[in-house]
Length: 81
Image (cartoon, rainbow, N blue to C red; front, side, top):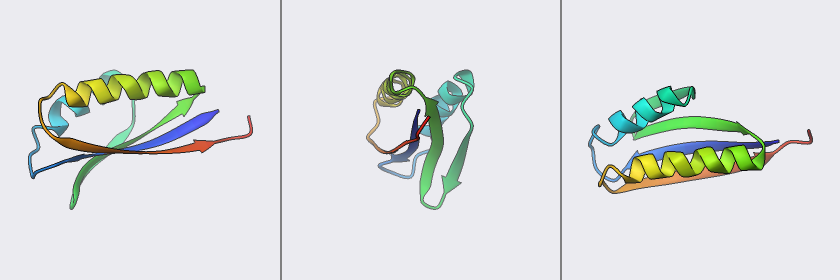
């Protein structure tokens, strides 16, 4: 099993980045939190590597389609299942 912790940071103080991404995460059924200082949107994905990378690709495309600069940080953890 694979776990990915994801943080998305807008390159400027602009909540417009997080609104469509927040909607996407809600539609995907992901738990997430939004931090204001520094501004970021955070979630975690769990599953097979295929599931995690497919969801990560969809999340990246959703965030990058907003035509805004952003930074996405992903940390991967493997478990012994």
